[in-house]
Each structure stands twice: as C-alpha cells, then as structure tokens.
Image 1: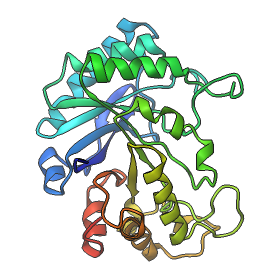
Image 2 (image 1 turned 90 degrees about the horizontal axis):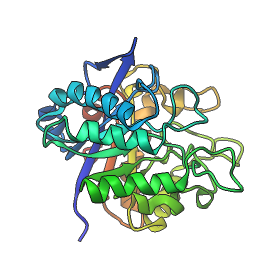
Image 3 (image 1 turned 60 degrees about the vertical axis):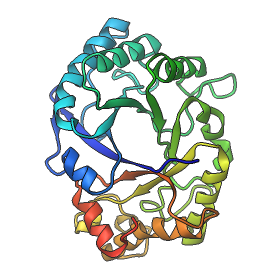
Image 4 (image 1 turned 90 degrees about the vertical axis):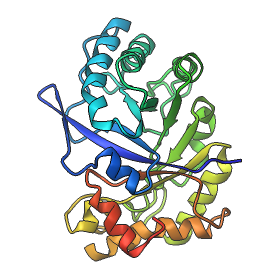
Length: 300
C-alpha cells in the first residue's frame, strides 16, 4: 500500500550570515489548508549559502543547533524536514563531509520540536557521485550511505531528495537509479515548466507528450521515485523562471499557468492514470502560486 503525502518546498534566505523568512511562504495552518502533509525547509539559492563554521562534527552541531532553534517556531504545527547543506561554502567542488553532516543532523534533531521529522539532501544535481570515471563529481557514495543510515536507522527519520533534470534526454545516465536506495523518497524535477529545449536536442522540443514520457520513466525507474510539480510567480504576472520568459521559447506569460497545469494532465496520462500518491511541490516563495494554479487546475 502506497501512502498519500504531499511535500511543499518552504524557502528561507540567508543575508549577512542571518536567516530570514519570505513573507508569503505560508504558515503551517495555511500549508495544511492547501493539503500539504509536510513542509520541506530549503535555503533559496538566490541568496547566501547556509553558514559553515568549519568541517568538524561540533561545527556542524553548532550550525544545526542555531538554525534549528531559529526555524522551529516558524513551522511548529506541521511536520517538516530540514535541508542538509551538502556543499562547502568555500567551494562548490567540495562537500562539508560526513562529520559535519552528522553534527548538523544532531544539532537539528536535539534542538527542535517533535514536528521535525526528517531531512532533505540539499544537493539537487542528478550527477554527484564521485568514482574512478567521474572524478569531477563531489559526493563520495560511502558518505551518502553513511548519512542515510544515520538519519533513517539511528534517528528513525525521513530522508528525501529532489534531483533536477533540466530536460535531460538520457535519464538513465544520471545517478538517480544508482543512489535512490539511500532515500525514503526521490522526487524528480521534470523541469518542463522552466525548459522548452531538452538537452541533446535542438528547437522547442520539450512537448507535453515528452513530459508524459518523463513521468513514465520516473514511475518505473525505482520503487520510490515520484514527481515534483513546478510553478512560480510567473503565474502571478511576475518575471521568474517560466519557460515563456526565455528568448528561445515561443509563448506568452499567460501560458505559464497552463505549463504548470500540464503536470496534472501528464499524471492522468501516465502509466498511473491518476494523481500520484506522493508529490513534492515547488511554488517559488509565494503560496499564492498554489492558489492561482488551482483556480484553473484544481487537482494541482
């Protein structure tokens, strides 16, 4: 039996080494009113990275404790997951490492309420495991396996991941089918809303039928791969990441809501032929995006 659950990405920002909220992300009650089972706290990539005191266990613990004590009051009232800062602040070619990650997990776990129920792997690249062939990648698989075991078995908490695809044609060539087993759930981003040209092709080729193909690949790839639905403030008339704001895409801003709605139609046309039981939602930093899309596509 597959349980029904929805996960909403809840963004915060870091400015001048301090954590801040976005005004319209939604309160726990507002998120639950819209059917979200979980909030997933994630730092906005448009601002500073999560502060990093060092690479030791106690550096991670202190950083996690500070963040957890800041975050918890905002999300008490809904079960929530906390991002794990994977990459080093000093270099995107380095990771903070297993000692830091374990400290971060403990700092969060021991200094938050019972509403904190899991962690989110904060590196969304689908190509991340370093090996003899892929020496330019940064995550040792042994360390990912270690932190997975620490979270899921030692702490008894959820561990999830949401890799982007950017319209990649060769999904079998990503790490998704290799490292899925380290997570309770993997919510793949089709990036259809943002992308009109798929990698490996030319022209406006990311069609609705190809979105359905991507969903079918996600469903069949592993026992725990599911979908991330995507929309942003473009549906509110603001310029953000909808494909219609790209110079190579031929569509107007008012079409953005339909590209968001296509995720609903694609689920119905996928091998599941229904709304998927586990879903993650990206709605930028404004809960109003959800309301606006659902005015036209109620099952979004």
